Every structure is written in C-alpha cells, then in structure tokens.
Length: 302
Image 1 (cartoon, one colour):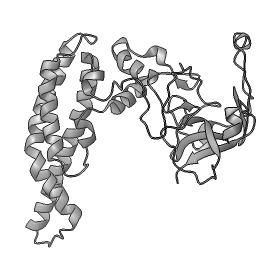
Image 2 (spheres, rainbow, N blue to C red):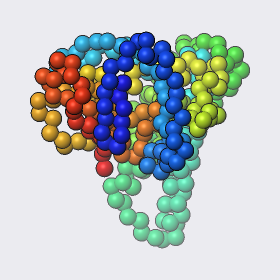
Image 3 (cartoon, rainbow, N blue to C red):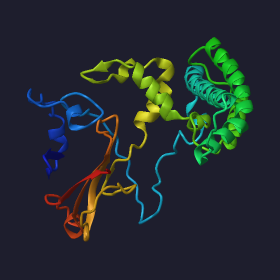
Image 4 (tube, rainbow, N blue to C red):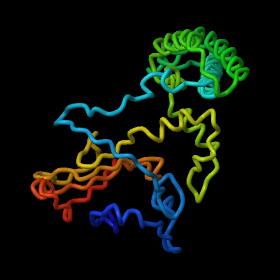
C-alpha cells in the first residue's frame, strides 16, 4: 500500500486478511477540486480503479511480453456496426470540414487575384495548395464511400459483427488517401482508424457518477471497445519503469524504480504537463525487501 502526503510517501505491506476488511474513507470536506490543481478531471479526489497485476520479466531494453494490443489494427477493435458507424462518422465529419476549408482557401485566393492583389507564396501556402491539389479528388470519392458505409452501418443491428470484406476495401481507399497527404492536415490522423477518437466520443456521451465517468452506462454496442480500452495495459508498472517517463533531472544513480504510474484519464491524473510519477529506492535495499525510504519523482514536461 502506498500512502502520499505532499511529496512524501510511505509503503506498507497489507496482508490479505486486512484487505478483506478495507472500506472507502470519506475525504475531508474542505479539499479543493483537482481541476484547480491543473488536472483535466474534476472532483475532490482522483478516481479509484481496480487492476489485475500481470507478472513478466524483461531485461534492459527488451520489449515487455505484454498481451497483444487489440488496437494495432482496425479489425481488432471495429468489431460491430455501432462502432463502425461512429468511427466512420467522425472521419466523414473531419473530411468534409477539410474539403470545405480547402475550397474556401482556394476561392479566397482567386478572389484576391481577381481584385489585382499580389499574393505571397510562403512555404506553408505552397504546402497547403499542393495538399489540396493532390487530395481533393480522392477525398471527395472517399466521402461518397463513407456516406454509403455509414448508411449501411445504421441499417444493421448495432451489435452485429462488421462485414470486414467490405470494410477492407474501404480502408484500402482510406490508406491510399493518407499516402497522398504530405502534411498532417485535418483528418489524416483518422484515416487509418483512430480508437482514441472513438473512445473520446463515447466518453462525452457518458453520464457522471460522483463526478467521474459512469462506465456502467456504456451502451451494449460500445462495450467491446470500452472494455478493450479500460482493461489494457495503461502504462503503470510495479518494480520497473517502462517506458521511461520523461521530465526529470533527479539523480537516480544506484537506484531502481519501485513503481511508476503514468498519467491516466481513467484515474483523472492527466493534465497539460503531467506524465506521471515514479518512486526510486536504493538498489540493494530494494533487493532485500526494504521499501521504506526512497525518492519520489513527479514527471512534468513544461
């Protein structure tokens, strides 16, 4: 068990019998809101979140043998028609906006030229014009395909499995458009499938319970994606630090990490500059099971 006070901490071994008797403690009423401390979340406390520890061994720079990432491919997380519809609708919205902004940009420049005004051609303007010229035709074609796909998705049972024969063709066209984009304008980050964008869209629709998201209210059709997000590895590690958290200059010679906890939106510990925190102990003392003294590091990038 870790107990924090300011930048100090204490560690205690809690026996299984004692864990069976634990109960939530009501926090003091005069606590400030965590939002006032710069965090994106709100409420008097951070969120509580149960975890299932997964033991593994990694040496030096070896990649940790973590469970397979379901978000490495769209096929792993776009599993039913409801998720397919919300994912495609986000791209469709972004793509239409990008096309509309590009057309407005061209029309404004033509209007200025028609008035006899001299227009400069700095590097970013040239890049924008090249982007519009190379992608507009393919983008308009993809809009039509996405509109048909969204209509198909809405006509299906939300929880029914997606027809990936049709989806693979759609993603082929999406990746072709992404390959034409020389810059990260607008919708480029959505073209290959962006589970974080869909996750955020679902979160915005959830009610709150005690000022935290109430995941018990997730619609059944969205539960497969939500469960993958909340049950995956979230960057926390006991007896190790992987990946290395940025934002510290402390002297850690002769020390090993006891624990590292990344900034996590499920815990409500994300902020503009927060990367997480870690606790470092003397290497020999930790090898002997002594966890009482160490160095607390809050990883912040400014």
